[in-house]
Length: 520
Image (cartoon, rainbow, N blue to C red; front, side):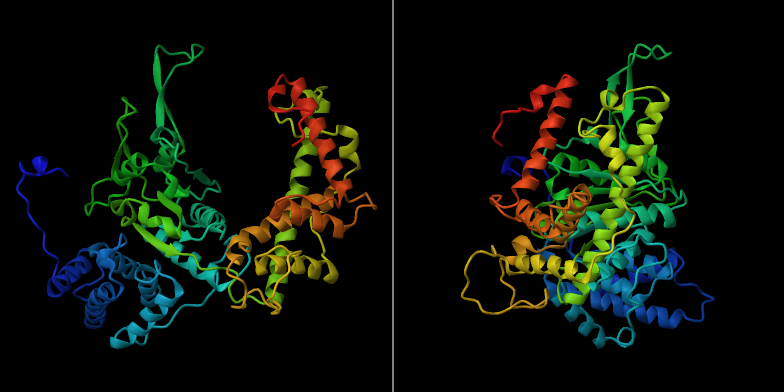
């Protein structure tokens, strides 16, 4: 702020809260929310636990130098801990989530050692390392389980969460799983809907909340302008958990607008959110089940407003592939391939049902389809396709897929020569080239398996195209800069398919998007 502006104000510096004062504040919060009760036989041990947690709070903040960091420890953490304990959460999980969740594994280990300094904390043990019942089926690994447990602990206790990690580490998928599980199992609404927004620099508040628009003349009212709500507005009212993916990409004006939504008031009054865009109802009630899960790149979270970040539980997602051997990776390959096989089967089934419906109505589905890429070969080709619900990968095929993934783990083109004679037998080995971060991620394996399944099904009845050639083509398509001269038959088939789809687009009057003579 400018000197001239500041000169008209009296500066008042608010001193840091002393440890002794924080002890009293913690006891007051605990009594206020019902954690400490006069007739409770465990009152003495609970008071000692709170004292040790406050002492840990100050020691850990000093050791991690959090006061100089965007994610500083404040009285919010003390209040969150007491709220979680009052809800029956395990003390060990609470401490490791609130004080350790925002750090990498190395620092988490230091926090575990720090617990040994306190009598009431040194005997604490971690809970069973597993997913809760009815959580979406997924690949189990320590990094994922720990992240999910911490996220759900925060959501259960009325906290919003930011999951941070490296790009393509699975952040979006984990956020969607946790959001779906909360909406389906933990909220009172019991909905199976998922609300997600992929944030960009062009995101506007109106994209999330809503905007005024001119009324449709066909509507039976005299309103010239009406408010059209967006998904966040509906989720606030309905009590849904939403996902804001890549929140680090959102403009500051959107971040600042959301701050008002995240403020928690310590009162019995209903919490409301201001929506001036809706002149008829400028205040809406915030449903008690409303939650936000954000995702952010680990390196970019410090670029977000501290006032925003400190209203969230920050949870770090470690590398899910770290320490995994060949057996575990093969399990991952089989799980992903069967997931995408079921996806292909379900999509094909929906297309078939749509065709049957169109025949009943004597409608040409190709001409009426709003999707120019759907059924581009016509009814005859669709009838010939038979897509199974599951796929059984042979041991040989699984090993071949693993060999391709090993190439990614080395972080270089397989055709390049190397002075490094170390063979990578396990994807978790520390000897893997540092460049592997550019290629080997949980996302790259997932994309590779998905591409394989799509092409396996597409060329299922074409015996001249082998699975090995499909594998080589898929790898080049995803991870190489250029396609080689090999596998020309696959390339030509896909080119012909795209050209046919472009003709269909042209028939719909949208030919400006495709050019038959384009070399690309």
